[in-house]
Length: 201
Image 1 (tube, rainbow, N blue to C red):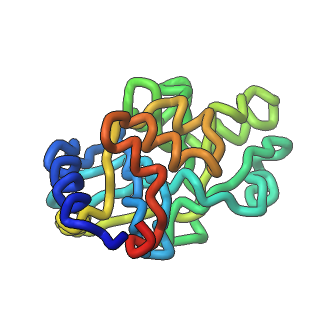
Image 2: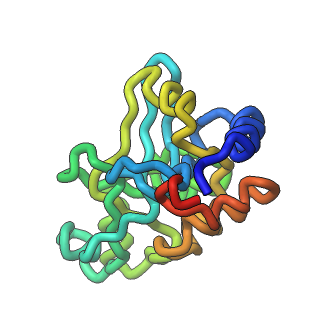
């Protein structure tokens, strides 16, 4: 069956009630998105301003490396690395749920923070004081210029939902796209069954 008028009306209802992107929200790729950088991805937004643009990190593009293999000062801290997006792949970023316990951290939600003092992080790693499950490390990031994400929303590229610590820190990269859609519930939850090619629907 082709991508029918009935499905189009159903999707219109979903997008009409979709929350707006903001820091602390997740962008969840439309099942039919074909952009290879973002196909079936989930992106945690840490900055969003209509006049300045948007910055976030892909949560489900694991790399075959550990953070201490890339950053020697993190010693035995062997948290996995993720590709945060297609921009500046030679830069390291991190989000965590330690809040202001990390000096210089930027709160994203009450339970999720972004960045912080890297020297402090290195010292705590050397002391064995960093809980790996409380951190996510990324090479590169995802960025949108002013107005770019709004244009993609007009094209129905992204579902949007609040980020939860469970999805960000306790869900495997292999499962997070499905779990994020199920987390939204209602009619959106049925999208986990959609094929990547709409002509196969």
